[in-house]
Amino acid sequence: MISDINKKIWTVENKNNQKLLRKRLADFDFSKYSKKEINELIKFMRKMMAENGGVGLAANQIGFNFRVFVAQLPEKKGEERGYVGKFYAVFNPEIISLSEEKINDREGCLSIPGFYGEIERSKKMEIGGFDKNQRPVKIKAGGFLARIFQHEIDHLNGKLYIDSAKNVFKVEKE
Image 1 (tube, rainbow, N blue to C red):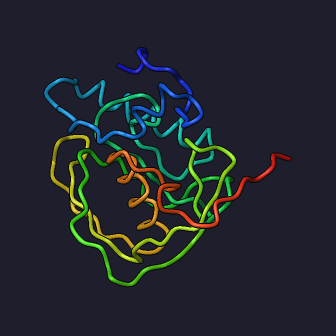
Image 2: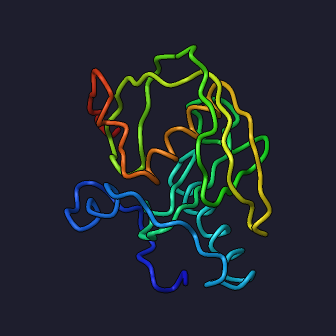
Image 3: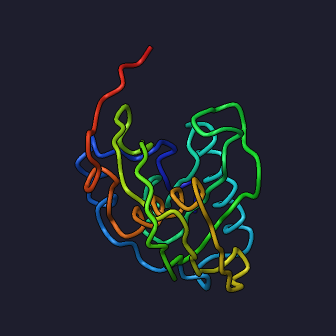
């Protein structure tokens, strides 16, 4: 499974990549993959996320057409020195609820390198989905973790943050 993919983050700069990044992905079919393959997928996604300084990664960002994302909070928002807290790998996630209270904050995306924009997201949320063993999970999240989950589920639905962001700006590399 993993050997079939390009080991780079897919970006909107590539028209072929953009087709997959902008489509709702198929549900992950657990019957098509062994436990070993699923574990390899999660390990690979976690590695790609960390190597690229991300806090979340959706399957289509590395060329897969199925609904799974990984996420983990960094030590401090905006820093790339490591991760703390629980690591999440969620298969076939769906939003159960979103709080009415919203927060406007800056976001970036590994698939849109060098750009940031302000986007309004719910402060709290609850998602449902499955863990790697196909057991149902429900996760309540708030703050930055809720923002990450909303961003990654948007990816799985073919939506990019720039579709609704305001004040999008480019950051020059040092």
